[in-house]
Image 1 (cartoon, rainbow, N blue to C red):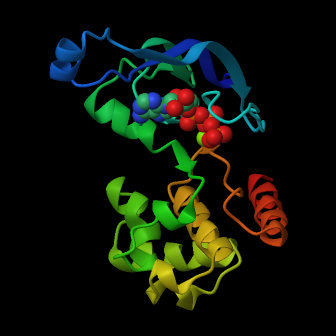
Image 2 (image 1 turned 60 degrees about the vertical axis):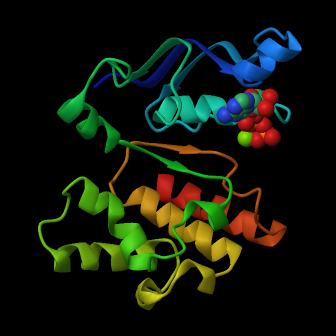
Length: 209
Ligand SMILES: Nc1ncnc2c1ncn2[C@@H]1O[C@H](COP(=O)(O)OP(=O)(O)OP(=O)(O)O)[C@@H](O)[C@H]1O
Ligand SMILES: [Mg+2]
């Protein structure tokens, strides 16, 4: 096993923030490009916690989204466990996707409001065909809920029936359900109350151990 899990080299992302073509022609404006991420290289080892710090708008979320494949990179290379993420297609990509997950900043926006918690947490299991039967999936969801400090009975509720901290626990349970080796957390506690922030950080540290 290689020690380096994620290796990012010279990652760059340019956003096109120009006005629509017709407006540009009429107003005689040039195309406007925004350099959000410029030549970032980093290396994350297995089992390591890697923190990315920077002021607002410095490109942290953009880097996170490129690493998990939610945004394409304009330039640069992302390797996961030695595999170039821009290369594989189809089945290989699917197998890779199972190995990393993301927890977003805002648990109010990242959980589908129309789905019960059971279904939300089971989605990665279903997507990656991880448990053989519906009852095995159900059991796994109950385990995950208890793992993040909630009750197995909470699964039948909807996201709006929970507090911010509880929702972030649900988001963590979902991220953990496919047994990922790597989790990208984009400010997972900044939408939460200060007292709850510590609980979530402690939970994440325990789970990492
Ligand atoms: N989809 C997009 N289209 C155009 N510009 C974008 C887009 N996403 C991000 N940007 C711009 O890229 C820059 C970096 O944004 P990003 O969200 O990565 O910052 P951040 O470091 O995560 O900030 P924060 O700490 O406030 O979350 C910002 O100037 C932002 O306006
Ligand atoms: Mg951000």
